[in-house]
Image (cartoon, rainbow, N blue to C red; front, side, top):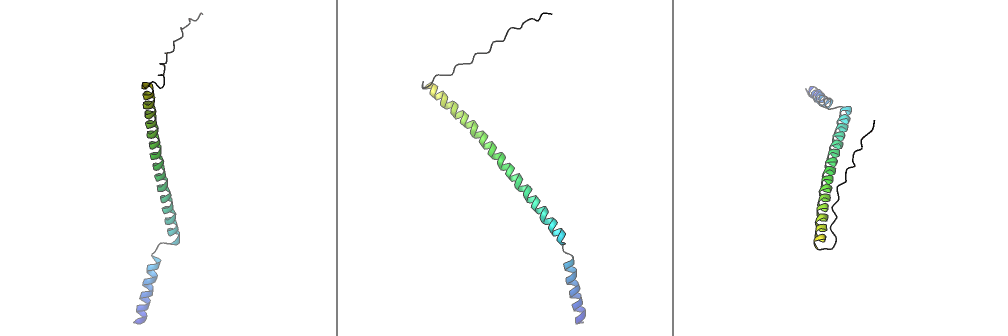
Length: 99
């Protein structure tokens, strides 16, 4: 009876270990996980770059507004002369072509 129980235990242990994933499957899963992680990190980096670009654009717009306000204030205080209005360009008269 002891021998039969020992054989059954050994068979059960052998059966349980043979059901696990193979070394190739484990390596393939590790590589797939690494690729997924790299893709996720690239997406996060791209999103961070997009946010940084948006912030830079807003800061540039705010600087332009601040510069305009400072210029208008300087003109109001007569520290600088106002800019001259640009004259519209005159259109050249069309010449008739002789045939």
